[in-house]
Length: 381
Image (tube, rainbow, N blue to C red; front, side, top):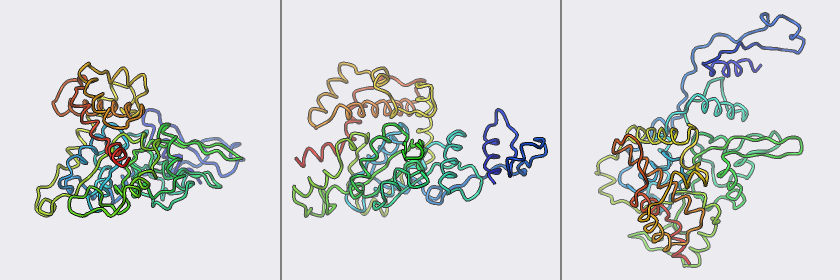
């Protein structure tokens, strides 16, 4: 009954095609292998493009230049991103369009994603999935639905988002236990589900994009609408997100409302195709640097950070001055260095340089700008 699935495994290995045969019963092993059923010849699997990805484009986002820039850095370096802003500023709009600027899945990633969806029972027919997943679960989901498990040990949302984007809207409204259960998968890029009968490890190399309001009413720092929340309410709201979770999110961006004239009559933003070309080129730089096409700057180990994110005297002085103004943990400093490395790679792509140069002070300053929640929590104190 799994013969069509096995045929996908054979067709995905172009370098060495293996014959695939089917057994209805173990007694079939006594027959010559040539007599066993083989899969019917099929046309090459067609691409399955979810409507939410294929019909959207970054050109529809007008203004919000800092958020757009953060999305490009996130896609280029594999950095997790959180968007903070009042309702209606375009947080969800940007998140839904981020998959359109990611490079296409390579054959190995495509097979991994297909296997996960097959195990979860979400593969309607034996077809290789060639579009990066986009998952957007509701904030009322359970820990098991997010991480995986249950009686059958099925993959959760973090594994269904493997190779793609996991979008968590209303981030602080998720159950505290759900958010805390993300800590290890965000670091390890995989999740292990332990049950009495077995222990299962699923891949979970996803890009986390989350969105939240700056306060309970949503209008803290709004230029036109006053905030109705007290300092205690704002502090309690922000404290729903623990320090360890925020430390694992590289990019934190605060969005402000754009003018009505810009939204109605402003020029369209840069399209997804142009941004995706820069992202793909930046990832090619990282592939050469790390020797692994599946790793990005967000995956740098501490020793690799010291090697590839070296600080000049001027850069160290600039970075130290900026960090001293905020409450930044050692883990956050490492995140800033990784983001600065990605910014430098994108700068090399934009300038057409043959190879990326060292990280300049302006790259570190831009990376520090993407720590909006560190500023908010400092102000709330």
